[in-house]
Amino acid sequence: MKIEILRFKALHARVVIFPLIALLLGASHLYADSVVTRERTVTKIAEGIYVIRHPDAPDTFPQGNTTVIIGEREVLVVDSCYLPSSAREDIAQIRQWTNKPVRYLVNTHWHYDHTMGNGVYAEAFPGLAIVAQIETRRQSVGYNPGWFARFPSRAEIFKQRLESGKDANGRALSETEKREFAKAIAGIEPVQAEFKALVDRAPNLTFDSEMNVELGNREVQIKHLGRGNTTGDAILYLPKEKILIAGDLLDHPVPYLGGGYPSELVRTLQQMARFDAQTFVPGHGEVLQGAAGRAYLSEVTEFVQTVTASVSRQVYLIGNGPRNLEAVREAVKKEVDVNSWRQKFAGDDEDNRALFDGFSFPGLLTAAYAEVWGR
Ligand SMILES: [Zn+2]
Image (cartoon, rainbow, N blue to C red):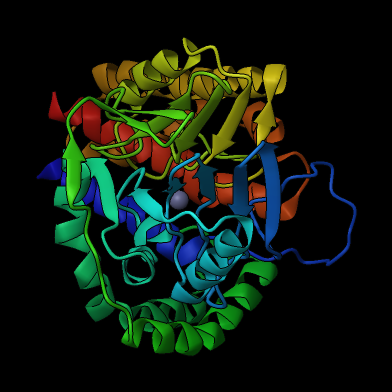
């Protein structure tokens, strides 16, 4: 229960602060990739395999990547993104690529930015199987319908943040962030209008540790390697094409670490590194190839490992429970070289840095604390 409360807080922080649009459109960025996505892009990563990256919703909510895998008989799609209108656009594009039906839609985890388009796919492709790890089905059934009821309150939370001038972690908002809250408030109405007509669909085909799908001369392995970003994360691996689709276990350029199970995430990422993958598809951000993908995966693993180890050490020295969270947070900030990690992931990009400071680092710290506290 304690863990759940802290995780909710972390998740809440994500809803409130993430993501922020660049202050200067067209300004030169040190990193080509940004946590803010302004336009729809399609990357062909192999013959008949495409990754679609979606622009952020008008209320600034991020949308997860969608991967389309076309076999000789049928099609498998990974994650249905957030806005039903974006999912419809993807389906129209899939129909241009192939006349074969989408038979499987895999949800890598339950988060809204990867699953809200489920209903649109189910309508477009009768007989569709929505596949997920068993825990992801449980959480989708539990959390996702409630999102529609809770959705209007986001506007209220945004307004409160803007008035108080502070984010959910009590950190003062920058002028850019304040402008972005104003933009997000204005963008809520069109998103809400889309959700009014939405039919929610939870996964209807579950697995525990793995399942394989043969699409016609194309094998797809779906695996749960352990907990990490959520309790039911799935990754997909295509052994012939050496493609690994990671969901939010891996996000680029800044990892999404606003919750989850950090110490287990380390082990899960280590498992992921054992695959002979040449192409890594993150849950958000650009596709990573070869050595760059491996290097990024090990960088994220090391970061999570470093912070969780520091949290453990400081809890043993200071103590656990709600009273000590602040003291541990401060001690970890002193012990871990935060500036260098921020530079590695975010460079000098203002949006990337805002995500690192407002979501990833505090979220990782809080989740790691909840884990230690629970043991
Ligand atoms: Zn996501």
